[in-house]
Length: 189
Image 1: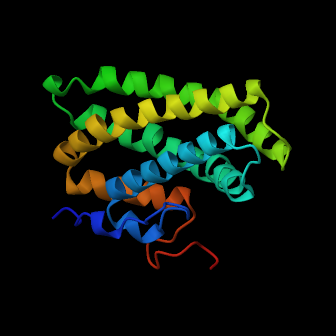
Image 2: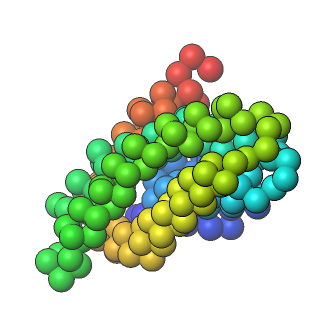
C-alpha cells in the first residue's frame, strides 16, 4: 500500500525546512521541497524589488540554496529520475523530460553559487540593477522548472513507482540526510 498523501500537512508559508516526517511518502517530501523552493523564489523576487532587502528573506534563501537544494537535486538525479527511467512506459516519454530537467539542474548548479555569493555580500546594502536581474532570472528559471516537475514528473511518478520503489527512494533520501530508518531522527540526535 502506498503511503497516504500528506497534502493536508503543508506548511503554510513554507518558511521552515521540509519536515522529515514527510519522508514516509518520499514523493510528498519532494512536493513539499518544491513548495519551499517556490517560496524562496518569491523571497528572491522581494529582495530584487525591495529598496531595503529583508534579512529574513536573505536568511531563508541562503538556508535553502546552501543546504536544502543540493540534497533535493541529489534526491531527484540520483534516485527519483533513475527509478522513473526504469519504471515508466514508452508512452510516458519520460526520458526526454528527465534529460531536460537534468539540464536545468546543471544550470542551477552553475548559477546557485553566484546567487549565494550575492546574498551573503548583500547585508542591508541596496541591490544593484545587475543583481536584480540575476535574482529575477534565477527565480523565473526555477519556477519554470518546478512547473514541469509538479505537473508532469510527480504525477507520473505517483502512477508508475511501486511500493518497493518508493521505499528505496525513502531510504536513500533518509540516508542522504543522515536520518536513521529505525528512529526517523538524524543520526546522533
